[in-house]
Length: 331
Image (spheres, rainbow, N blue to C red):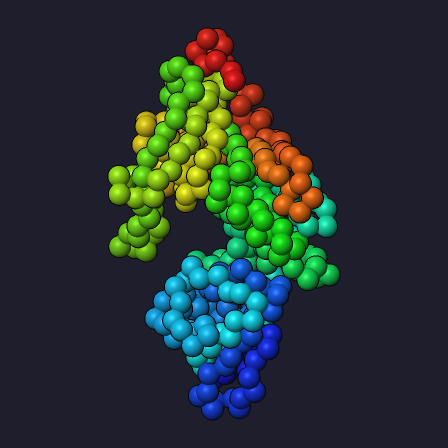
């Protein structure tokens, strides 16, 4: 067995392996305002995410001698007590570097075009995601964190921060609704009318098999998506979806609930239609993050980062029969 308590980075009290003593971390200015669980994931290298969550929720982690909620944001100078962490020594594995198309980059921010099929971070049976592999590809960066997430099967604009100040600034903008996210989705059915606002409460749940799903529930988290038709096709419609909240699987659940499931969605979609699409050459879910709008968190000024529709999706649309513009007016 290997005692990982001596391998915590940062300012840590000295202790002997196997002594059973707790470790104490002192939060530096570079980690100011980071959530306690994310802070510990960074500091406790090699410790599973589930274990970090458990020791925080159980109160075994103390900040300045007090229990804190998992949502607590550490402050520079905080003293974080971490219980002894003992795990079987894992085989060292390094994330394979990945090169993705860069849509925007400066000293504080990085925007890449994420392909479908690539998870944004490791976990749930996935060893490494975009964030781990980009860190491996850019070892000279002292800081690189996700600003937001995309589903594994969703392609498009993914924003990352290269400075803590940029990350906290964009997180505040996301919470306060000062950013804009637009997606393209191909849905089953003929959309009637033009713009439609969908406001539904959403609740996360786990099936007996451990599968994560999101359900419409009036008591769930408030969520709002605005949908606009872009082009009508035979039996389906290309939609533009503008997110006003960022709930898990929000667009997918909203569209499925109102009767317009996304093409290729294997969790909330029309499974019989999906099988037909596969036979006709559609190999993925048709959901693409086409644009992210924001004000630069450090320099100011409005920016819009766009990712072109992947060639596979654009080519597949070209095989469909378009309907007259009146069936689905463009924006």
